[in-house]
Image (cartoon, rainbow, N blue to C red; front, top):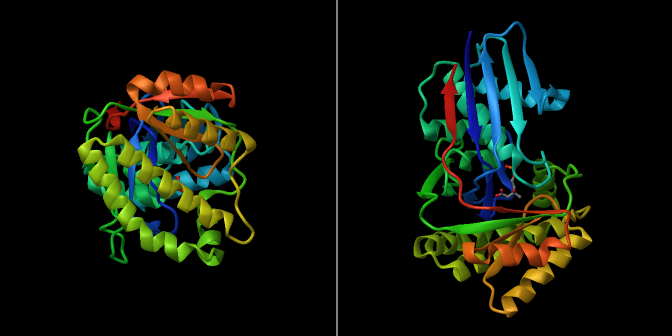
Length: 320
Ligand code: PMV
């Protein structure tokens, strides 16, 4: 029996991933760029060689669909593995568009590899994590991370790559929590439906590469207006494909729209702040560290809760 505990941070896409070119391997239709966040994290302990397969989430036995996904992921690490026990905790709401699947599968991959006694190679781990949840392949590093779309059918060239560490740029993500309820349409189902039925989907794919180049250049230049503008464009295009799917997918709540207007009004007053949303109603606002409290105050009355997060670091792992 051996045991390892890993901690990983969620990441928020600045240039979005939406749509799969291969469902089974979670290969993306587009490349993406993210920021790993500090403070929020998933901690996952894997016991390699337990009396039976067992999965706990936030202190309780996990729902069987969740447990199946977790155990199937350990099978990817070693198809001949012994029974394993997994105990995972999120320091923030699970499955509410706050990227808990990203930090979750990153932590599970890292703890699993180390508990299994395998050599840890971050690129290999990123390729494995991607198969659990696409966005997880970006949480194997801190700071700004690019996920290569790749072209190979086996997905060996589709993984994360660190583009700038957490100290490169002291920006903030203000998370405006509209609700912590679980989302009605999961991201995989949403992507399948969008790709199948939205007339805008091909345009989304065709124009995403230019947004990615713009985002990467803006990060290198630490140009917030350039990055924020590209991020909002990528976000609105992604949601436009959802809104035009059949049946439509509308994650936005009235408070989501209220926050979008508040941030646009802040910008009119000279505050550099830009919005992004994922597969859920919560809004994440990118701004300078010096403006974060003003942004949080402005959106605070419209939502349940506001959190200010900065760039986070690499995942960590301990062997017991
Ligand atoms: O990989 P998933 O299933 O967590 O999908 C993530 C999709 C978005 O959060 C909407 C965009 C992204 O790039 O993270």
